[in-house]
Each structure stands twice: as C-alpha cells, then as structure tokens.
Length: 52
Image: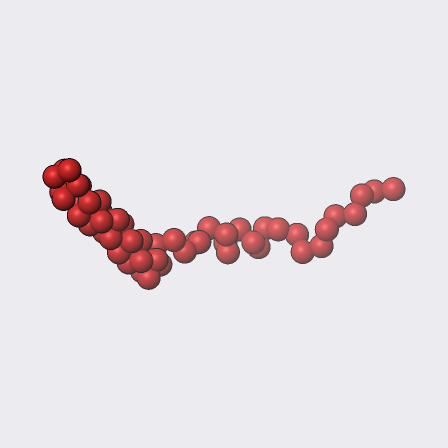
C-alpha cells in the first residue's frame, strides 16, 4: 500500500509534463503542415474527363 504514495504522484507528474509539453509544442507551431501548401500547385483544379 505504501507504493501507491510514490507511484501515484510520479504518474501524475509524468502526465502533467506530457500535457504541458504538448501545449507548448502546439503553441510554437511544431505541428504546422509545411509540405501540403507547396504541393497544392501541382494538383489540377478541374477533374479530368475520361476520353470517349
């Protein structure tokens, strides 16, 4: 039973550190998509019609 007094605060601290680091990276733009806007120019605007 005494292990819970150590394990529970450690688990809460790790979870809190993970949430804080995720919020920090999102606010700094770490997960912004830099590839897709550059590749959109290569796509056709109109759908290709099959030849009859």
